[in-house]
Length: 86
Image 1 (spheres, helix red, strand yellow):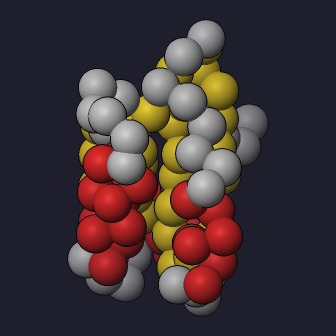
Image 2 (spheres, one colour; image 1 turned 90 degrees about the vertical axis):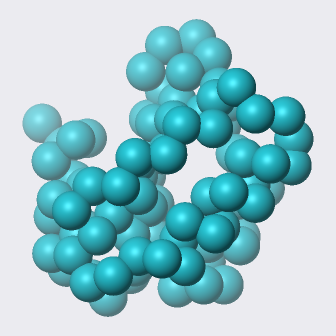
């Protein structure tokens, strides 16, 4: 199931904090769809430490979609991939 989180209007460090909080709430089959105004490079090492995979898509200038799922959750990975694999 997709869980959408729009952090595009938040000030630093709030997008990072909210995203990490949301990641902790993922249950099997869930993936997080984060809307952000920039690519969150500082988030990626933290996701690795929590056992998450991700894909960041630049949709247009100042608009990014980041899809995050648990590495071992193949159902969530497939559902998220539907957004970025053509």
